[in-house]
Amino acid sequence: MKQFSLLDLAPVAEGQTAADALRNTVSLAQTAEAAGYHRYWLAEHHNMPGIASAATSVLIGHVAQATSTMRIGAGGVMLPNHAPLVIAEQFGTLATLHPNRIDLGLGRAPGTDMNTARALRRHMAPEDSFPQDVQELIAYLGDNAGAAVRAFPGEGTHVPVWILGSSLYGAQLAAMLGLPYAFASHFAPDMLEEALDVYRRTFRPSATMSAPHAMLAAGVCAAETDAEAAYLRSSQQLAFARLRSGRPGKLPHPVEDIAAEVPAALLAQVNHMLGCSASGARNTVKSGLKAIIDRYEPDEVMVTGMIHDHQARLTSFKIAAEVLTELQAEYAALS
Image 1: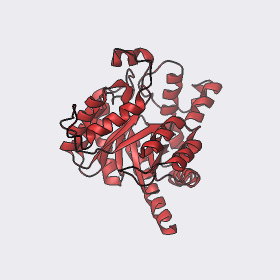
Image 2: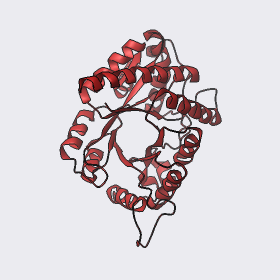
Image 3: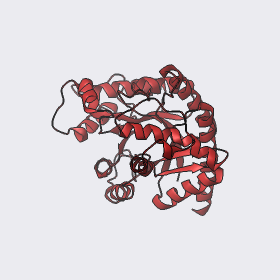
């Protein structure tokens, strides 16, 4: 593990507003920068009352302005929702304002329900043009002089492009194009091992990367005790259960007994989805993250986690940073 980073969904907690969530995002980003996180990503979701990062590029600019050294980016932009030129102009502008600090992770899923996807795209195309759209976008960000259509700002910024995924499709595309790859194991862990194997085994060096760079995402909920962490984590479990039941909402208050709130079969599904995670006191989290890293050997780990109380969330990510810094040093000593 060379680096560790943080994914923020800008959760809107029950009893709070989107404005509160956006203030919390800036607070968390500044805390993350001080704690040593390498990059801070925000994700595109739509029609979800509990997530405030729908206008992802706008929020990235806001967070980049409030920080100074950490890389800020999208984890990710759902490219089928957008014209590649528009994204090139947006991220070219961000990279012009914040040189060498902007990342662009691209996903193929809509990041929402199909009715909202139609509202975003207006005209739904039946064909899958994601690979072509990715290459078109990369071309706009590159040295594109002489082309009929050019991105201003954007051209020549060479914003690093990542492929995101939770299946073999993204792994194959990232390998074919010679791009870094991030797997969404924080909510879809089933194909993680196979996807990383495909990516590493079939990677083709590109003009920007000579070797593969694989990142996995892991959930984290760290607190003073295992019991406190279990209590805090119940908010995320409840949120996922309600989403799976077709009742998305704001991030719920935590509960003492999650099993009393969610039917056993649904709770089992939720816990499986959130299985690539480490929750508990400091040493418990360190053991959990070490087990994940030892098994999958990622080049980078991106942690995430939604906690209702903002101060508890800050504490959780501070503990995670301390643990990951220690693990980073331990792995470096062995290499």
